[in-house]
Amino acid sequence: MFGRNKEAPSAQEVVDSASRTHEPQRAQGKGAPTPRRSVQQAARKRPLVPADRKAARDRSRSSVRDDRARMRQALDTDDERYLPLRDKGPSRRFIRQFVDARVNIGEFLMIAALVFVVLSFFQSLAVQSAVLMAFWVLIVAVIVDCVLLRRKLKKKLTEKFGGPNQGDLWYGVTRALQLRRLRLPKPQVKRGQYPS
Image (cartoon, rainbow, N blue to C red; front, side, top):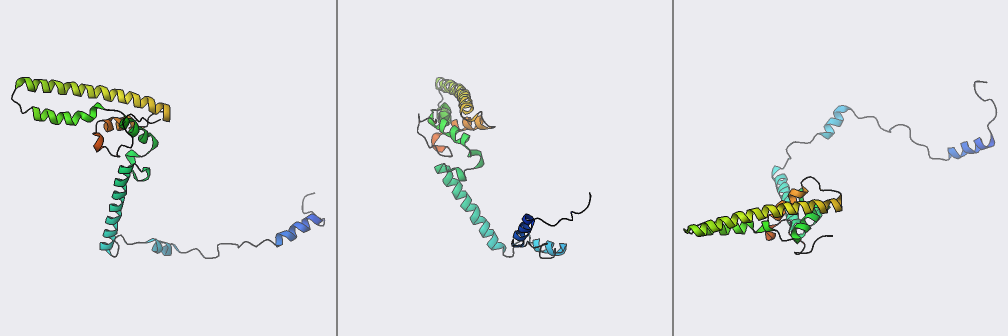
């Protein structure tokens, strides 16, 4: 009952064993002895300071210079591969296009501040008070515009991407406060050309 089967193998078993003999034999083991730990550690050792420090420094500087040139080119052309991390991603591209398509009051704030500084040199109290009042009105208008932009961006990002990522809304507001010509990455859409 228990033990080996003493019967002769069947014809099918003979054919199966014959076909197995024609298969290539796998090598048993690794084929080489395991290297000693000291040999492995010696193979991994590299000098902390390269032999030719001047050449290594020149290579490092040229690679950094090339990376900066690629990043600068990407900021001009909006090439996603070489953009800085803060500007990468489809949601950030959408935000840039949305902000660049609208007229933002915040982008005129710096020009108004410059005019305010120039007009503050006049000694007339009426001129200075009018300029100060106009500047405060402009600041309130910029704050209201930024709040409205933030609400619109949140709604659009929720429709398109399921919600804004962390920092997306602040990214849009800070871009809206910059002069259009000085924005990086450079605007790729005209005013009124909103993204779909």
